[in-house]
Length: 223
Length: 380
Image (cartoon, chains in turn green, red):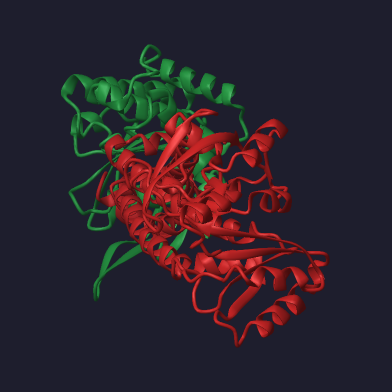
């Protein structure tokens, strides 16, 4: 069953007076529980597609539905609420808040829920345990290695138990060992917790860890 | 409340910058508290006079005397219960820096007319019985360590020579604005020692009916209009207000200074918030990507700005209040009853809050309107 349904998706950016067509009439289904890698050259629109899936950007034309919800038709406020519970985003450069501890960073999406402070703390701690950082809850990002920071970011992405995880070059800033740990973790999230994952990557070895690899080039998506 | 963690963590992000901004706002509010308290103290001083007493002074200026021979005519005015008189002495105790007001008074009449000023009965009796006796306020006791029975020498300036007084009483006042650092002695001593050359500076008339103050004042001034010294008669409260106005339009001056300081600090606080928000652009994009709404980010930035300003403002104005109370500040005797009132504290905290909100509005709007996708493109 498709968790993500993209139909006739067209995205055009306006740069000064120029129109830049990123892709046109794109169709894509991503099944529930799928781990999909998205590859392609720089500027091919991989990240743009990810942003559209996350509801961070709006299509010029066409529809994006996730879990039956037409996110391309949602208001800004509805999109914020939807993102808080339905999707987790992992960035290349982790993007943890340096002033918060690992646990506090993970707790951020839960602040938008009616959970009590204790429940939030417990869930954040559990998420950190899942990513193998149960002993680093009170560490600040500057006290963690790059691989550990990315694992905290993954914990932040899954803490609100979203069905869809979007990862934009999650290993792009990591050494081989840390990258391997992160990819293993993503595989576990997919296989053990049933998360649907879409991962943008330039790394063919990383892409191989997914169930399927798709290429986006000049607006055309191929398997 | 759960978002306080974020606000507080962000304030601690750059501790030096936060400290400097808090200190700037604190200093500004300290200054505001001090300036505002000067104004309120002067207003209180102007209001301390009674409406049931009128002051008769020389119409030309307060520095010119009113002849002694006017006394009988003043006493004869209908509606006048009693009359006392006083004279500014202007002596120096050891050094000019030891300034405090000294008045030669018609002692028995004066004390009878001023219930605000009280003396233990034995001290009052001792004072009235001795021509060279004086009574002093509690602040002079504290300042100079004077004791009852001690002889104090003043160097006369208006009335030259060494003047010796014996302290026979320490008065207390029901209202600090009345002045707790005044030195009173007998007008008779002054008159006798100057070979009857002393002339009252002002007369104070106690009225049977305060409602008649205006009519009695007009009648007195009309009676003396063609005399050797025309008079100006007004209620004691109006007299005090007029006396204070000799300081010039100090309220306006202090307000101008206060406003200038406010805008200077507003720029400092606004700059801090702009910098703080600008360097967190990518974090705001991340917060939006995890579901933080635009209005929530707006609120967080506004809360941060308000808290930053409130910390400084509350610290500054409460610090000023504590300092002035601990040191019993009175402007070297020029501002008796000086007090930083709680109302001023409340106004100061309100100003801090306003300052914080104004300084936060631009970065808060920018954060709310941040195009998340463009900010993310720069960071992913």
